[in-house]
Image (cartoon, rainbow, N blue to C red; front, side):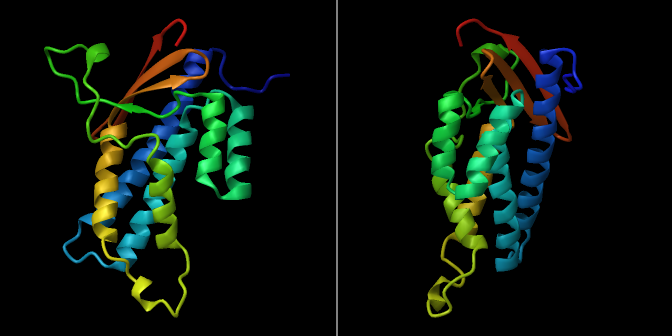
Length: 201
């Protein structure tokens, strides 16, 4: 007997993706807070790095939330290999359009469907490198390489990455494996999602 709690795949997709975005929003807000203080230290950078890495991981997996088996397979690959590049290959094979398409906020004169791509959004090809750099902040370091204790540019890198993730996620489209599109926006304390019917996406 199927124990999936939703009768409608549309409702399931909207609810599952909403859960995912709620967690992504929370992690991104925590990273913003850690990076925004006037006296940010390396402990803050470690804190922010953990949240930013979770934002990337949850964003990678988000479009698979409508297919539990595929999601579990992708999570298993990442857990086993800790290799985001390999995980990326796996998910691209499942859904080549999984990465959110960040767009500028809509205006009164532009319809949602014609919104302009956000130029500062994080590219799908760039997030594995960003994930790796965040992981380096969180990993132990060789004590003989003291110069690596606080890498130059870490604060600036994390600030820029947070801005790129906001540009990617605050207003975006995402394609699901079931040939449907979700339009989502994270505004203030709310997550809003709309499902669009498409053919041959």
